[in-house]
Image (cartoon, rainbow over all chains, first blue to last red; front, side, top):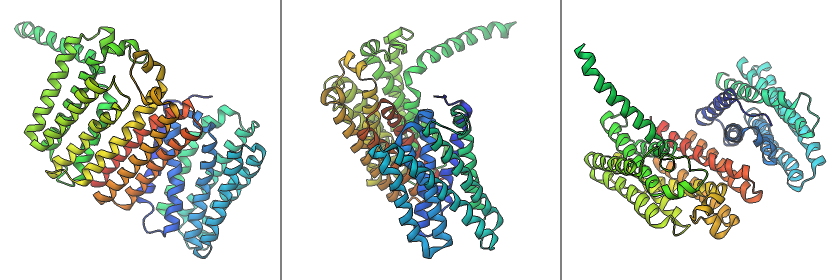
Length: 201
Length: 300
């Protein structure tokens, strides 16, 4: 397993601080469901960054990390839906919980194939929603152009999730070492894009 | 020429002081001392008194540093025999002979006396609480109970909670429920910190004959205690934060950080592993430091 370099720790610490800033000051004035959903998403990003700093890339071997990392795009998707389509917010929340269970139950039960079969579609669909919804809102003129940064954050988190999912299949798209080398920068870029998108729009 | 002659003894003296400080510095366990110092500063800030009062802040930081550092040095002085047995601690200054026991004892007593004296001058109630922390740590925990019972950890927790209580008492001029809650948060955090550490280095503690919960009651009991104490620490921290009147944003942050602590504790309970145990040990310190920094930032 590749060891964390000091530069990786700095990148992860910066990502953790940006996520913490968003939790503290970036969620004011949103509805309850949106606030809770965004808090879950940015909270998991924050704790994941801290655990990576503490444990190194070994932290990624835990099945809990896989389950929780799924909650990041799901939380963002529910939060965006609650803000943009309040009438569909409860449906989105129910679907997100069902998707999380679909990823978690096979992992806990040890059904490896079923776990992978649910993980990749859930990441893909949630990622597409995070990219499509903000883009639609900007095109319709409901949100300012910087909100497109949320699309970028969604795309990056989708890429990160898929890279990690393929890594766990044993047939990664990129080499194991390359994925781990990219991960801290990817996490920082994702967090900064999301926070900037929410703050500037 | 004269100034050069006069300068030589001073530079020699400074070099000796510098060399002595370098030898003695590891006796202070700087991360632990600094973490407890931060809890004291957070307790003071939580009182929402005029926080930026440099004389008081300097007095608080200085007296706490001296008292906490002094008690740590005295612990090291007393435990030098078991430190020399355990591989983890055998390279400390006392077992290796870099600092003599006499030097360590003098340094510990001097720092403790100066710290408590400064604290009493600052405010009698504050000084009394700082003294209580030092008394619980050195006399009750280290000298009396540490080698007799695994439950000594509770008294270690009580002494660990004193800096935050003292800091708040200095700000308020009295002890209140929120101060007690903050102290309880530290008290319940300490078993998480110490028990996970004791499990990681269980062979060392057995070799030295120091009873721990893991060696006396088994790892499973120790993990349950860690989980329960993590829940109680997070609950006490959130309750204190609500009592202080912290903004929603900071409450959300504390909930997230506490959630991480609970998740890791549950993880070590359900899937015990050396790596998970070490992660919990480290995260518990990060949790306490982040929570206390959040309390300070909210007030500032």
